Image 1 (cartoon, one colour):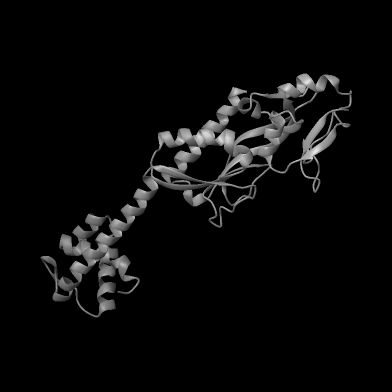
Image 2 (cartoon, helix red, strand yellow):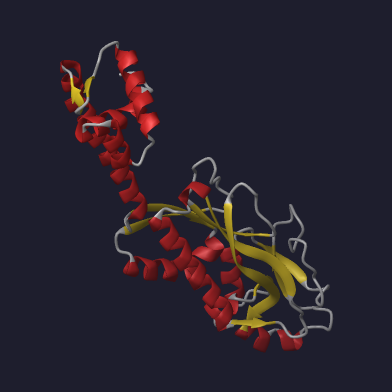
Length: 293
């Protein structure tokens, strides 16, 4: 069957069922002249007459009778395919590939995933923990949660909150170490980023310029854990206060504006129900952290 025949078959079926061009046009909401031209085109492509024409209307020829069951079978296949695809998009089932950094995953997002799974038991989440930015456009992930100043224009991006950054240490560190420190941070310890880059990722060492950068940790989650265990102080998002109750902001330090937290997804997935349910749920949960501060 020729490629363009697929577009003409609905008109053939409408005439076969309605018995006239005018009734067929009303049946499928098409123009009378368009149906007439398409029937003539279909007959020309096969080189046979598909309908007998008379004052009483259109009746199938033997060639039309032969084509009818195949056209109906094709129609059923197209309808079934459309319903299947629409069902995938409209159902709260299936798998979502979700990538994020370990810094956010364990104590912040993991409880959210648990609550989401309780609400939508038929949606499975494939978690990918990575510090690399996986490509949405190259189909490496479906949804990504990233901290960044800005994002690419070719993906759908929802900014869920703005990070404010502070200098934090543990409660025990403030009670046992800070009272014995010098005015410029003598005796204090920074937990920073690896020496291959800026020790504080572009952030200031003030007001403790003389504190020692003793530990350098690339992984954000490990850096946070070391701070909560009393090993030193570090720059981290203010919202971590709600997640790690042992954190305390260092006295005399000011907040600075950090990156934004974005939910990223491919534009083709915006209307997929399972993805929309997940993105909406995740955005609401993350924004609630801001209100808890």
